Amino acid sequence: MSEGKGGEYVVRFSPRQRLEHCAIMLLFVVLSLTGFPQKFPDYALSRALSDAAGGVQVLRFLHRGAGLMLLALSLAHFAWLIAGLAARRLPLSMLPTRKDFEDAVITLRYYLRLDSKPARFDRYDYRQKFEYWGLVIGNLVMLGTGLVLMFPILATRYLPGELVPVAKVAHGNEGLMAFLVVIIWHVFNAHLAPDIFPFNTTIFTGKISKQRLLRDHPLEYERLFPPGQLEPAPTEPPKAAPVRDG
Image 1: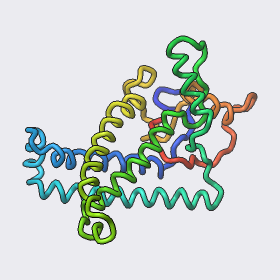
Image 2: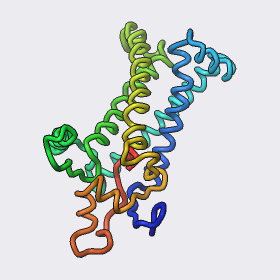
Image 3: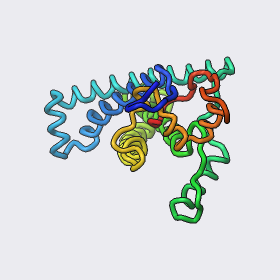
């Protein structure tokens, strides 16, 4: 089997993971395009987007609809995680470990030419775990504050009224930070880094070439391809959420 021009590949992401990534990617775009004109209404681009959508009320409707869809997607993801843990079929490959901190130090030393060899990563490296948990925590903040802003009267029945302006500030600032992290960090690491450019298709096809698997995730490669074994060792489909392409 091949990926691109020849070259053997292994399946890295399941159809569910790929669909989940595409859904959150599309929702992120919609939330950004409908959220920033509300946060920065005085900018010309914001007014243009608002006019193109049919007014700020339409933007709010679309933003809230996308937010509710993100809430549903997040609940489905957490339900899948809980079910996998309960059935003991979910490898905890996304949990940060001491090795991740050691790998970060090794990588920094390698970039500074203080070490001659790079860190050896398993299925997910420390950057991918950082992105995943950043997405999880960021989603919790965005969804929690978004619900407060969507239902302020209901929220203030049980919580202090000061929570509403706090939620507004937190929601806007977290949205801006998430946008910058995705544009600056995720897009570069997943697609624009020198050893990946111009595009990493793994999260869309679900496949990764054996050559790149060996380069980027040597510990996983050695587990799948023990010495003297030509085909991958039998494994269950990947059970962690897709947070970075490859």
